[in-house]
Every structure is written in C-alpha cells, then in structure tokens.
Length: 425
View 1: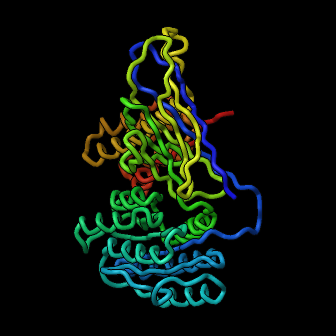
View 2: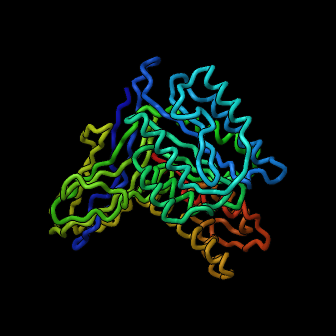
C-alpha cells in the first residue's frame, strides 16, 4: 500500500505591513515494501504518428517508430489493458481491432506483428488521435490510464479549436507524455497537450533515440500505483491563493487547474503517482495584514488520494519587527524562485534570438547560464552551450553562436522547465 506525506518549508516571519506568504510543499509517496500484491487496474495507450512525413528520409523515421513501439509493448506488464493507435488525418486502431487488449505473451506478440505491418500516409490531425485515446480510457473507468503520444509534425489538418476541444475531453481521463520527433513539430502544441493532461513534453532528436525513450516512458507508467492525487489548499476568509506551481521535477503552473471544493478550498490535480516518488510545489498566498506579534494560519494543505482526503501540513504567518527573522531567506523558496527565473530567461532569450535582437538574447541567455551554473543544473548548462559560447559561467558572460542546430534550440526550449532539486543535506 502506498502512503503519502507532505512537509512545508517556509520563512513564517513577515515584516510589519507584509501580506504575502511563500512556501514550498514537498509531497512524498512511499510503499510498504509488500511485493506481489494486486496490481492497480491500468491502461497503456501508445499513439504513433503514421502520417506521410514519417515515410520521409527513406522511411527511416517510420521504421524506428515501429521498433520503438514494439520495444514499448514488451515492457507492458501482464494484466495491463493496452492499445496501439495510428494517427494521420484521423485515428485508427493498429491493435487490437477495437477496444483494449489484456497484455500477455500472446497479445504482445500479436500487437508487435500488427505494428510491423503499419504504413505511413496521409495528414496530421492530433485532436482525432486524442479523442481515440479518450474513448479507450473510458472503457476502464477508474483505471490508471497513460498515453504515449508521438508526432513528427504540426497539427495541420484540423482547426485549433478542434484540438482544444479534444484536449478538454481528455482531461481527467488519462495522463499524456507527448514527444516530438525531429525539429518540424510545434513545441507549444505539444506543451499544451502535456500540461493539460498532467504529462511531460520533450524532443526526440533522432529516430534512433526513440526506442530508449519509449521504453523508459512505458516502464515508468508500469510503476504507477495510485491513480488520482490532488493537493487541496484551504485559505482563510479574506485571503487569496495567488498561485500553486509544481517546481520539481518540472515547472508546471497548476493555478488554472484549480477545482473549487467550497469558497475557501480548491483542489489541484497532481495525476498518478509511483510507489516511491517526491515532488515539490510552490504555494503563494496573500493574507490580510496583521499586527506585530500576531500569528495566523495562512493555508492548510491536504492531500486527496483516490477521493479520500487526509491532513498534511500547515502554512503559517507571524508578523515581527525583528529584521533578522523577517529577512531570513528560506532556502527552498529561494532555490525554486531561481529555477522559475531560469525558465523565463531562456524563453525570453530564445524569443529575442529568433527576432534578431542579439543584444537582448545575449543578456538573457547569459543570465540563464549564470543561474543554471549557480544551481548546479549541469544538464541545462550543457544545453545552453549549444546555443551560446560561455566565457564566464559564474558571471553569465556569453557570446551567441552564429550557427545553431534547430534541434538543439528546441531541446533547450522544451527542457527549460526541468529543475534540479534543492539540496537539503
């Protein structure tokens, strides 16, 4: 059985007149170590782009996608419901012919044979692919449902509102990890899907990279033990919850996902969880100003696990005239505020670079190098070094590179929201 805990990190002391409280809430899941217990009801869906563009480059992309899908099928555990969907100007079943199959040696072998026969042709209408996944997920209500979505192109053959409606229809039914192959797909389209469906978005630069990524994502899905977790935030009358953001392992603004429980309480869906997992959330609450010496409960954090709520942690506010207390910087809040700034300056720097504003791009990307270096975020530093030449990482002194591979620029953009955990040792 999986249990959950939450811990609050904050500086609870506020100077006179202050009305804003920041806290980082760490949520942890932990299993009881029991092996061989009943497996949660699970659905795994793999949706692969089979449009005509996948046949370009001598069919190399399509062949790699089929090999990656076959490898992913091999990682699906016995007893898991699964389906393979092809996507072009519409969606169609690759395996089974309709509905869901139950994974076992025979069905996995059948699925791989049908994948091998798949051919690429036609256009790209991603909304129809998502609707097919929604139909499949609805066949197992209450199951832990996951979708791996791959495309190499843009949503060219349906209107934007069709995709938006499809995303809305999928929300709450399954989580979706969206992957773009090569450099001709639209980051914002895939990010919109992944954000709404509580998944991740990333680039697969080369066809040969697909197999490892498909296997990793499917194995992670097999490890999910709890299908529905939400962070429930209560704030007292007169207070305002300004935002709730996931800050580790990725930056995701959950504010717009708030589901009202009552006038003082909102739920923020966190998706499915593995038996051993840890995530961090930044909460900011604006409260009525108190007098020096007053102590007030700024927020109460609860967790809702598969519909059952449980107490978790408290966010407090104490007004003081002691500057030594009120100016003390909480390490967790400061760290993740910096990580959020890192994502922002990368986005601003890349936008300035695309607009031909070299001066602004240099300043912004230099600041990004500085923040990533100070935070020990080596992965982001390495991504930045493919876009700028770094003279002084500590000081943020960089020079824009004249020639940058489009895939490298996209990788920096799409991975800018990955964070490093605060060091609590």
